[in-house]
Image 1 (tube, rainbow, N blue to C red):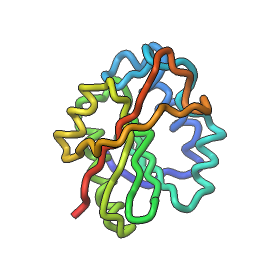
Image 2: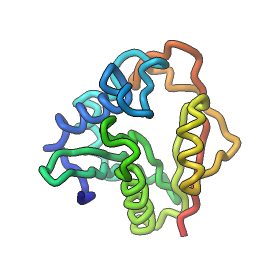
Image 3: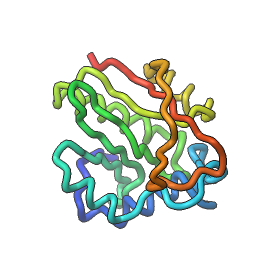
Amino acid sequence: MPITKASVIDVPELNVLVNSAYRGEESKKGWTTEADMLDGLRIDEAMLREYFSNETITILKHTDDKGQITGCVYLEVKGPKLYLGMFSVSPVLQGKGVGRTLLEAAEVLAKQFSCDTITMTVISTRAELISWYERRGYAFTGEMQPFHAHGRFGSPKQHIDLIVMEKAVV
């Protein structure tokens, strides 16, 4: 189950994976679903293609023995920090180590890019997800952000705040 850098050729498969991990009935097979909190798509192919045209962004993919993408993570260099987002694992494979492996690969990449910190935002009400990140060394910085008002990542069904979590990379 290798982790490699995704490319624009992977856009259709990444689009299906990310949306299945966060939205719709398929997402409810896993524990990372946002389907009860947000309507709409998490991402679309146009947005994914934009990511591949930005040299500060890397998307890593996890593939199974058949070459299918089973997980991915968006990484963007922002000065000395590496922003981690769009962290997705197939709902039927959650809890089987795919996510942990992707996080470890993100840390390796952070060091290669000379980033000293990995930063992310997490929906503040997602206690189980926050705990999962804490067990992997991430901590709440005390910073809160509003959910993205532009609607590009879906439409909230309720008020949503994001907490900022970080981990030092040594």
